[in-house]
Image (cartoon, rainbow, N blue to C red; front, side, top):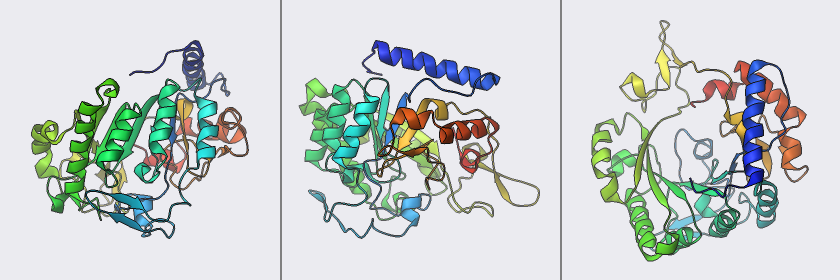
Length: 339
């Protein structure tokens, strides 16, 4: 990980791990650090209708906007609402640049829809932060690929859940597999052109689904030929799973759910005391500061960074209450989590 190691980052990390250890022992209920990992949401809207995504399930193209795409051009026709503003990003960066280690540009919406994303990445990179983008790649163009690489992006995660259009769109509803493949090619080409900034790792991420389980072996054989440097399989979070789900894979090792004697499906139990709520936060496009990526509805927001500093919110009463509950795994979002 190419993070600019500084004294302030090192001390912040020590405080984070110490706070977590003390809280697990029950001897302290406070924090003296700020997040090491910050997930920033450049866009709260998306072009696709993925069946296990709250944005996709909303059934709207994104706050009244219109999306147009072709192989050569991608245009967000009427930008505005749902995108993180430059002022908000600058406020966030000023408060994380000296203490955080990693910034991920993703939460629920599609980050490439924000035209300022390359600039945001460049500014985070120049501040010594390790940068990650996770995308469906439907808005990628050759020019954007070059801009992302030139900005110093460290890792990009491309979601591609099928090797045919049929298996791909079983989950990525409204998406194009050919566009996804083209995005991988453009990124590799950009790495070749921008050799001085070519530290980018291209990661192909595949959800383990019933629709694509016959392709898992082929993914392992083909991911490098597709243009990826790494391949990561991920289990899928599903909604309305109590009576089963058509996308649930056959192999129980790759399901987040198990069937009980009553015939219903339940979440597999997890351990308690998640480190993520001590080490990271999500900052949504509207400025809400959330405990983690499972707080899809902002139900446990610590507050809004437009109204208070991140340090105040991260150590404030809402954050302390949530962390205390998380030690017992009582919040619903903790019960739905898959660490």
